[in-house]
Image (tube, rainbow, N blue to C red; front, side, top):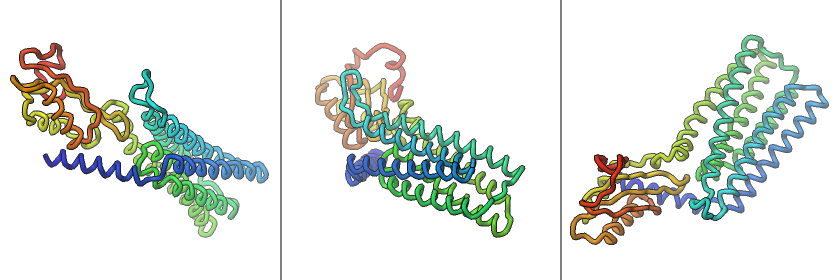
Length: 317
């Protein structure tokens, strides 16, 4: 089936990218460097705000500290995710990264709403820009956030957790650049409405991208089928396997970002060997759909299970 071959190719490509990405230790060093850069920036802004008496600068420092917390959360989740499975956590701790991503995306949504509110206030009463110091500091913040974004960019392709932290810093980099450009335009031409209008645009951009990126995260936590996975195609392919007389109680869900699992009751045709049939099903699941973990219950046509998930539902329950 075309879909099955597409899934297998996609899964192989995904694992190939992961294999060629930075090692776990190298990734930890990158995230650690990103945390250090943002922390230095935040402390510098706090010191500058105290010396200059600028509340706005201290407020921006607090915002940058939220990026530090996002990166710390991402770093901690990476470490927790590598813990070995235990009897109490038989699938391991890989979902720690998914939970961290959801927390960071939720924070980004709140940040976008806060930015929109600030922009509306500034539209009603556009602020004065007191000097080029604001522009210079905004450019410094852009350089630091841009550096942090580059540190996490490659890792973000393979991890929903790091992708959320990456979006945090990309957002701040865009905001800092907008503040610098807006401040320069206000100082040069007196265009005081530039800053709030740009802020509204950034807020909308953050909101759209955060909600879009959060979708796959919620899908995993809600035990949904892998994104792009066709349950009907999987069910039909298994039904075509020699020795399979039917199937019900089919569930296909994601364990974490890289692993999926299938459980199903497979009705074995009369005269067929149950062990051979389930082995064929496992092989198809692994090679054509990228499912390495499958729990299959073999049944005979006369001895199918009872219950709402077993009768009248030949495909997915």
